[in-house]
Length: 331
Image 1 (cartoon, helix red, strand yellow):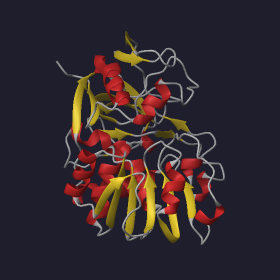
Image 2 (cartoon, rainbow, N blue to C red; image 1 turned 90 degrees about the vertical axis):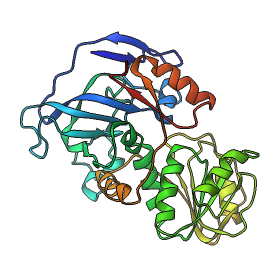
Image 3 (cartoon, helix red, strand yellow; image 1 turned 180 degrees about the vertical axis):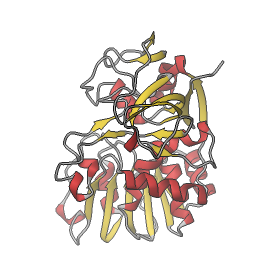
Image 4 (tube, one colour; image 1 turned 90 degrees about the horizontal axis):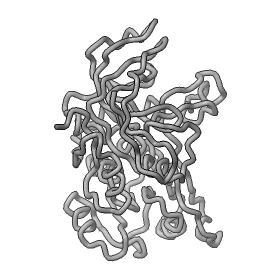
């Protein structure tokens, strides 16, 4: 099979011919159709998240069809079924976190495209328990970005509870998807972009945001909650200052630059700062139930597999307006 492989951080991926993997007990062999590119892939490739496995095949927003089921495979799937493979690839099911419905915090968890080989390839194997059935509403390209930007974004959104006035800092892929759900559920949406980015602010207003401005602006109303999707630590105290009493700031990324110090007065009155780590299978089930009802719309730009490094370069430089999706059978 063809695969794009990371040999060392901060180097371009290499196209290789590799042996097709074989499924072990409880695993699925999946012929990959598409794999969306995520900012976490950039963090891994750029060495900001040190990979414990090298060489590594990145990618964790995988869409494909089951070609083979390993010994004692999950009877909920059959050969030919379409599945989605997300970031969370395996947990032990035994630790205190797994036994308290917090499998996303499992100490021994394994992650697709990070600690186990991922989707920048024509085939992969995955634990059947952590694969999702995908809504028929979406084709293989449309649904790929939902498998991380959508799922992690949804977990971030649910941590805001029933906040009516919701702020979103950084209006990239995850924010665009979750904004659609927030508006569908009747939230008042306030969007913060890079200062001066009028194009993105107008896009947010066109989607239905009540207000959009720069990250250095204060919203016209105090927020009940804010989600920070940009990996910029200084946005945390900025968001705290925009919160009403009892509000929450949710940091929705796996990596963020350092958070600068801020006065305790900005946190006082029961304001809360929370991070989001990974996802649970329940998050996926809930998200894939609501997404086609909204319906959540994705915006994508496709690349053939061998142009994975080009897609990452354009993502890194900010040239991509839509989510890059690698297509395995592109001519």
